[in-house]
Length: 318
Image (cartoon, rainbow, N blue to C red; front, side):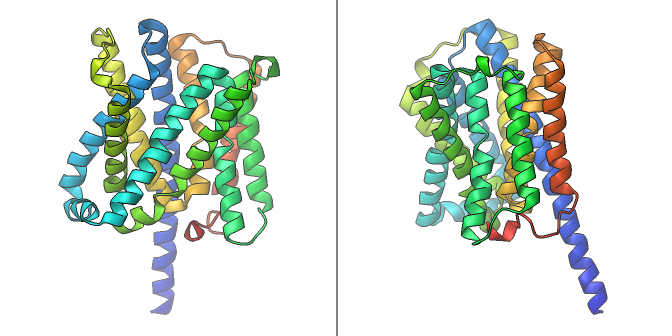
């Protein structure tokens, strides 16, 4: 009987690990696709990045709230009745979800996309360091290797191995570092809430609140984007559906399953996905050094999944 119980517990843990890693990968791919869609909108429609961010958060939040009412009505309604939960949601939404997008866009504005991306991906490193400090331990060899692979792979894909493409202004560096911090914050803040209410209600509430605050702040209803049918399809299918509804829902379910540290590192597949979509769809340049970056990031996934239960980056410490 005891052996059967142990086998069942082990099977459940393995199942959660498989789901968590799969969702982190798929979420990162969704983000990469939405990045290519955003690049197309910026290049062909001169779209306002702040307006796009507010619309994607608000629309995704509304859709996910409807979904939460359908599949998790009790927890979804319960979280709005708890003042402390609502306060935590507002904090997660403003200083996590919304702040990460705004500061990343400011970083691009004051430097360039490659520089902003490389520095923003310090975020998963900060998550690992925070959890190590919280657990009073040093990073393991496997964690250090995963960090090196993620940072190195992201650098190669964002700069094509040419450091001259990076533009480091004081303002650009400041906003990019804040973006990295907020990346870590939105990965860490909601886990306890998700364990209590579920991932869909928390993501729905966070996106809805962030979308409302963001939209009011920039008065998004006054903007005329000038999109034709293709532009609107890219916005709602690429950015709202795949990049936000699918991307964030899968990402945060992965955080719940395998923890923020592993999820953040595995989701770095976003840079691979974005590069592939940009090359295949937008005709972006591709070089051998990009292949090295691909290998680095894919190796990160292998390193983290090789021994999922050996104690490194334990989710319960988060």
